[in-house]
Amino acid sequence: MSRRTKSYLQTGQTGCYDRYGGRIACAGSGQDAETGLGAAWQSRGRFDLHNGIVIDTATGLHRLRDAGFGEFPMTWQDSLEFIEHMNQEQVLGKRDWRLPNRRELRSLVSHQTTRPALPEQHPFENLFQGWYWTLTTAAISPSHAWNVHMAGGRMFYDGKDQSFMVWTVRGSIAHWLPATGQRAFYDAHGLRIEASGSGQNGAIQAGRSWPELRFSVGETGVIDHLTGLCWYRCANLADGDVSWEDELAGIAARTAGAYRTSTSWNHWLIAVAHGRRWPPQRKSSTGWLRSTGPRQPACMNPTGPGPCIWTEEWWVLDRSSRDAPTPGLCEALSSSKARD
Image (cartoon, one colour):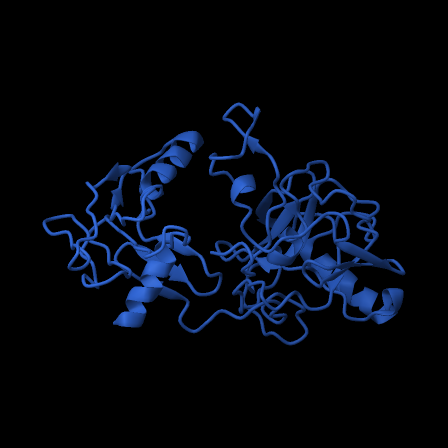
């Protein structure tokens, strides 16, 4: 996915760390701060303040500057009723305040900062460094709703009878940020209810709608058309639990050699699977060589440069220019589907 592609925000993380929490160089680490994927934002200039309302230029959402406007924790149902009263009173001249859904509240979190986990130089006041409610019911248990911890950025779900803080939002989130997918409505006890007047996530479909065909499935890769991300189809590549550092190393080993061109103008075909490279083959005078045999990549277009399909866990790609960026798994899947 291009760093310029908008489907989710960058996390805000700028540092890279070892397993002990020590700061390390980001180059070659494969960590969040090195890849920097997602829609970029900067702490300086992200927020505009207008008469007690903060406009988040990264998402388009409007929030109360006073993050403690509710003054005390309240249950989830009480928070909905509190906001209904805010709208009746037209707080700050507005009558469309609501609880943020889980994506909207989490979008405010910076994963580089703590206590609070908000972007540096944020303008908010009276922030409680604890749990805040979201509008989103937990599908795993509809008597629970999601909440976000503003000291560390964690997200979890708790019973709707618990008491947490309320931080209201208004406006439409950026159209390219995905909706939560929630369409059902539940009361404080987890029972299904009608949508009318509920003020719930299912009624407020904020964000980009999910496409009718969300996933395209290849032999080893899956494209998510909502976010533009591509996932390995196997969700257990390590075949068991591994440490965080070992997994980063394993990912680097799997992907580093994917049809890279050599240092000369000759083109090499390199396959990667579980960190091993198949012996490369050169371009011949009569065309592009195609690998044969079990567990080897089979090129879809052996007479010229082009994407190749996967055979079991092997996958390869090809570029005709040494200086062109090496395409990823998603590009191979997209190209193969386009050719089918």
